[in-house]
Length: 294
Image (cartoon, rainbow, N blue to C red; front, side):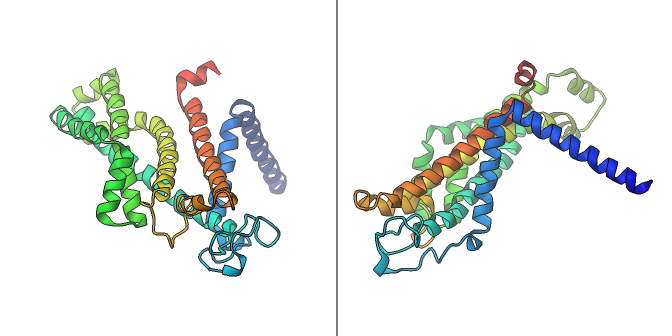
């Protein structure tokens, strides 16, 4: 009897998982596509040494500027380095910068947005600082920070994160200003509930769905900015392969060896497309107003 029950329970669980999968594919096929593509990119970055790659910084002048073929799937660059290996390893840098920038900007943006939206004395100070940061173009601020501190993964991540924080702060502040006028929040205040508990129980849960969607857009923007900084020579050091500096090194040889720019560029475009499509799907799923229309 126990075995029969276990098989029935397992079958019921599998049926529920299959039903959820069919529902997602029917209602949000683009979100599923974006999520699967992003997972593939993350797996490739994590298990790069196992994907038939070679040393991405090993020089081999004999094989310089070789076109794509059986020996080198994406061809080689001007130093004989394998473009396939450099592209796969470059995913580590782009995804690391994107995920760290998204996580840090959401964390600091959430704290500042909660303070600005609920504590009136801090609202003016915090928002004027955010307005000042938003007045400076993000790419110029990133280039300035990298130039002052030197090129490294940490510097690039911080330089990309800072311009993204004001956007998150404005989003969280707008949500908090709306939620604090709700009757259940006013009832909690009247009951003498302490401010930290009000923020934790009533205000913070309302910010989670929009922040998840915003984090995907920040991640895509951060990866694009990292590639742009690398292309301009203000990103990670040349000895660390990233999609931006791979394309920057290949632009001089574009007419002779377009594959140096082509394959990292396509990989970058597909990754950003996957993150943006996933963000759009999450927005449609988590926003109750849009979900009711579907």
